[in-house]
Amino acid sequence: MGNSLTRWTVTTLAQHLRGQTAQDANAQGGTVPDRLAQIIASAGTELWNRCDWQFRLERGTLTVLADESTAYLPTDFGEMYYRDLTDPSKAIPLRFYDDAKEFQEIADSYESTDTGAPHDAFIKKSSAIDTEDLTVTAGEEIAQYDLLYVSSWDTANPTVKKADASNISTCRCLYWASAAIVSGADGTVRTYGSFTSTVNNTGDADATAYLSSVTPGITAIAAPTYPGNKSVAVGTFSTTGATATVVLDLSDWRLKWSWIVQLAVASDNDYSFNFWYVTSDPWSNGEITDDTTAPRWPATFNEGWRLLARWKVLDDYSRDADRAETARKRWLEWLTRQVAENDETISISNIRIQEGYDDFGRKPQVYRTSVRNYD
Image 1 (spheres, helix red, strand yellow):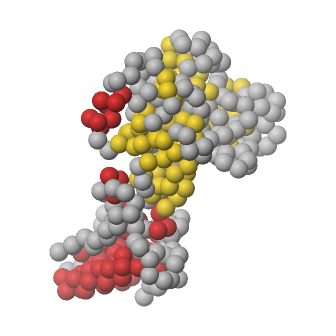
Image 2 (cartoon, one colour):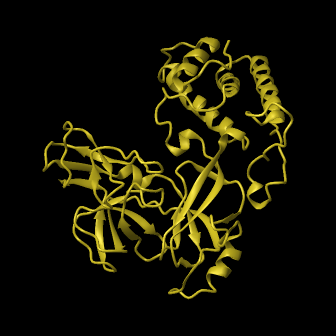
């Protein structure tokens, strides 16, 4: 039997449940652990996203840059925990809208050349562009081989600037410049290729190349270690020395799903806003990329994952309907108990975080938690 002290991975839980379901490990169509892996990972995602669990809360900083009308949210962003933010000086209130029509009416009240303090915002997905080459507009002087991030998606051609790893808004390294581009002009950028680096590779060939947090647009031989900086791998060094060649592959950054903040008007200055958000599950946000990494959640959720996955597996594979029904009831017993507590850090009775989906449109003091009916 599993217990909350077992730190499951998809692989170990698949092996465990294969034994419990007495399946042939070499059955036609792939081994049972292989076939169970998708069910188990899906169960982990469902458990993570089932409620706005306390452990999913995270504090982040929204960085709005001058002259930009979009800003990036953290890579593990799932939902806003509340809609009204303010900058550290308490002078700039920023409100998030969940009604696109209402937001657009505010945006339409500005001229295209207007700038102002960010007061009105809407969250939308970034425009993932599945192409190796992309026509862009340079938001600043771009040198050949500069690494670039998309600073704005709301123009005919996306606007790009030099990327750096100093914060979440400028570290999304999506493209590199195969030729210099004058500020304001259009040009073509790429996701694959290689060039001679200006950084001396003192490590080994095949060492990872990182985005610099010091000089925008260039590679570095080590991940930045400064507080708040991001570790962004952009490729590998194929040779060593002062003229080392960097082989870039930015396809993961090009296609990675991300949420961005759309502002009603381009910002007139740099601003930052601290806020709390609910994290997305680690399988979706890229924290877990294999079947051997355990999710980071409270110990009791390991048992919840086992129970949910066991029910899902028995429901798909077992011919014994009563056994599957018993597994379902045990999962719901665990879920009901966990939802009733829903505070993994305080042992006394406490107000609970509301269940997801319609919490974005409500104030944090409105609490509502429910258990989904699986009948």
